[in-house]
Image 1 (cartoon, rainbow, N blue to C red):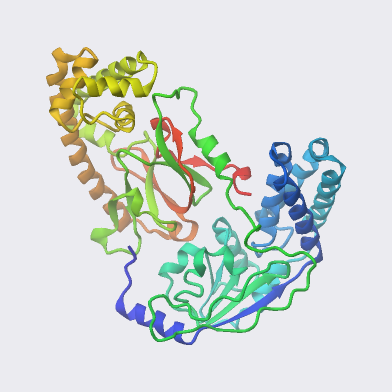
Image 2: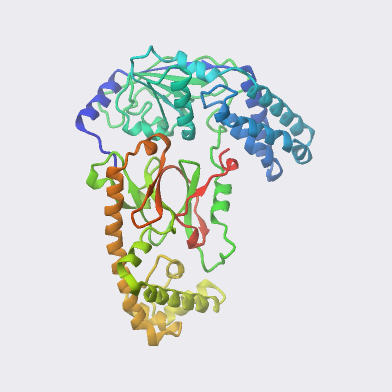
Length: 511
């Protein structure tokens, strides 16, 4: 939920009534030559059933192309990180020739040569286009980038070397809470931004300039863009510039920013995982070059931090179904993975050790019993035959997981205890799990208070500028706030221990 004051909402509406849009073409022979070779290689790879042998070359090639066409810094600037990517291209050329043949090898060599030439050039075509699109200092302006991790380096360069300390550099997630400004410069094309949100839909500036490389093709957007408007509010647009490049790329074949298959494989793999100890999960890429697996079943509550909310609502426990890209979640990044368990154990004091022992006991007995049935379906069927009415494949996996404490009904619990030969201790464990449950609820309230105190007293400048910020907990360990960049479109299976663990992103994931 976004908190917007009525006066600010009126300013948004006033801007939308007089907003205008103009495109500014950007050209550079070397970047076009490099991009052409990379796109031709990508098209060739897409025609194959298996492009495994090409990936070692294509991943850094696509990453370098995306950076060069979206980050307004001098081409030789070390913060771009393109030079190591070109080094990778040169090293992987022999393998590309083996897998792709001479045609692919020649295209790869052309891309590597063009890339090397670019990284040694004393030029800044995109940065020059940004500066030429800005009015004189004194007008509130912002620059919108599609790759959020570069917002900080670009803003520092503009402040220290380009003489524009007044220019705010934003990711698309920053646009939601942006107050109205005089001019917005957008590194385009517009289809890089979901549904043109806050660019043409409820625009934040009356003057919008889109910097567009000549080979990107896009349709003229609809003129009426203000969602919910009945007054025909329209953004006045100049015609798209005429194409001037032989290369033509549109949204149907343009960049795939995240290799979700690689992300899912890397996050979900665990040497201890088997078919019993798995749960469904969805991957999400986070700001600060991290990714995480979020549960798709069972306990799906996570901590949300909304820097724009009133103090009493700044931290809340929310269901994962309510999360969207741009929301900020809190994950424990040292001192253990779960935020609630250590505080619950702190509340329980010396009794926590015995209660956790009983929790591990019934779960290990259930896991051993289930494996003896050779399939999870057989184990579920046997539990139901014994009177556990809520037994299902998903519920059994939840019970085997770390976050569940007991069944909802006492009769189902008794049936399960009888099945796993714990009838004599069944009532003791039921009561123990009830005490753990109460401690978890109290720990949740305590954690909410602690997180709100942190969010209301610690400056959130780093979170605003970089999309991530670490906080030290009074009880030890730390939590980190991460802005969600994107969700995987598909669900995978993983061990419960892999859930809610922030993992550093590898370059080849972001292609």
